[in-house]
Length: 330
Length: 275
Image 1 (cartoon, rainbow over the protein chains, first blue to last red):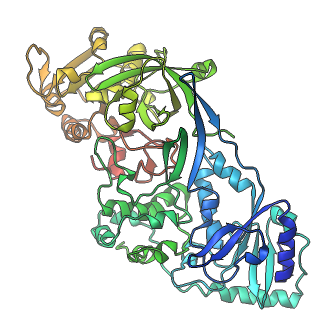
Image 2 (cartoon, each protein chain N blue to C red):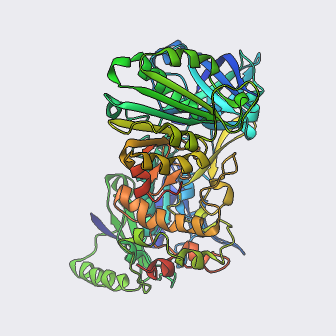
Image 3 (cartoon, helix red, strand yellow):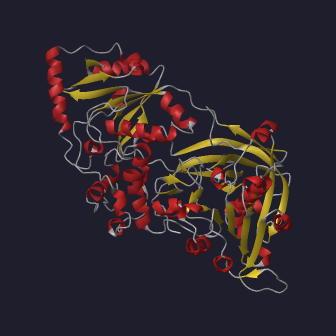
């Protein structure tokens, strides 16, 4: 790992240079809307302050809707035309550590057995410059999910804002390639200070929960009915989650489309015969919790949650997954 | 890297009307190399595309020992099956697969096999039945109990004679209610099993049918003496990708598309699957 001290001006200058070869994407504050990942034409538009993007970085890897192929009709015979993959190299800057941890979890689904070329292509063409969290909010619980608000967790480099400048840690060769020449090496004393600062920042995540080891035991508990009572089945928790990855396949305009889908919706599992294995909110919400904290752990060894707090922040009825998991009657 | 969601084009070469609402479609891949290399196990399924309408999973109902094209029997149920029923021979569809684990054939060898089917549930079993009959020496007795609501709803009627004539093979047909000119059994499948009491010695029961039939068949099989490990069933679930990614067909931590659709009753009990 390489450590550098970088001024804002130096960072902007480098990004301006990189804009010749890369698409640069980063958080931008949109009036009356919030912070969103946007293509950045002018580095000064980047928003690298406190707060979190409404949508997770997931959407830049797993598009909310993606065409898989076109179907042509010629002389009443079909032929299929594949959609060319975008090859543009890109840099995504300002990504929080929890979000890149989310990508590492998505890798287990989309970049392992039966590789999804759309997702893998997006992963391969992207360099990620993270941004550490100096001000996690009360909905954040990343440290309880085995994550960190300061360490890299799958970024190519990571920025820490400090005293109006940035400390930059370059982690991977990909990161080195684009960032290698920027900034100045910190002195030993600065390095020591920085290490102390880093440790302090880790304590800023105040919400601590325990993720139960054996949720399995309480599958039948009436608890799931109680906690899901106020759920509106709107599905915002699944769409804004950095790790929720369920999708639907539909045909539209003679093209096959993949679009986000989620366990909160009643028709997610509704069969043509009328059978539905998850007919009420109880089964659907329990599925969400169990997928994240039991099934995924059984299959891949980790929780499918990074503690980013989005599903809590944006739930219209304030359902709090961290509290629900913490208080599960195991 | 390949696009795992891209189907192969196939032509419908034959359509057989099995019942008023079930048709069997026979397909041939347009690409001869795909046709030659396509191989499946009894119990596996394909993702079937009707372009412009969408995709749905159907089990392959022919045995891999009888290769003259993939066959899928489809009951007219929803949007995609309705669209499929309107297609003609010569029309083009898409096929991805085969997917799923298929039946555990090695575990069935040198066993008495009891096939229990209801309605279109015979489709995946037909693949296995014909596979077993084509490898007759590997298996002991074969007993088939096949039920339907009415005689009109029985599928694969023109194969019954061959099954009855096969060595050490018995076929019992049943309909839910008595009909004119019906000479076989009358009563729902679990009731018939209670009457027949097929042997549980060295036996495996392979069950497929509507959920209500499976639900009432399991306790009867247990009562006859089958242990949960010796009862095998194949499940239906809404599926999209067939690859364990789209997230809707799971039972516990297992995906019906990838880890199933064939499960033993013992497995389903540990997964807390409610039949």
